Image (tube, rainbow, N blue to C red):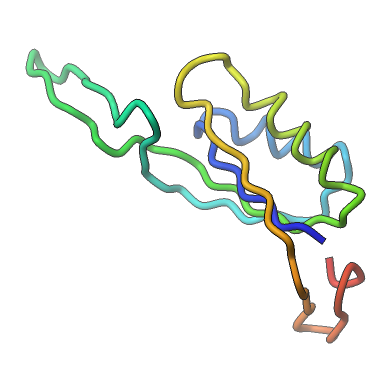
Amino acid sequence: MKFIVAIIKPAKLEEVRSSLSEIDVAGLTVSEVKGFGRQKGQTELYRGTEYKADFLPKTKIELAVSDDQVEKATNAISSVANTGKIGDGKLFVFDLEKVIRIRTGETGEEAL
């Protein structure tokens, strides 16, 4: 099992969710976050005054998938979230040691 964390542009959330639904991803968690990458934020103009936005709004998506779904899930996210511009985001894939469904006590892939 793997745990995938995707940091994407907020405008791409619905497209990514729809793309993951098409490949039968059972569930995901979404958080509104702020951060920066290599570009270290951006300079914006507000009422004629320039200011530096150090932390940009991003959306974090977290999902747990079985090993055979990892490639499909990462492809689904990256193909839809890709605009070809700076700030498209990142995908992180971690090994998932254990999953327990609290309601039923199921463990492993059955709990996904």
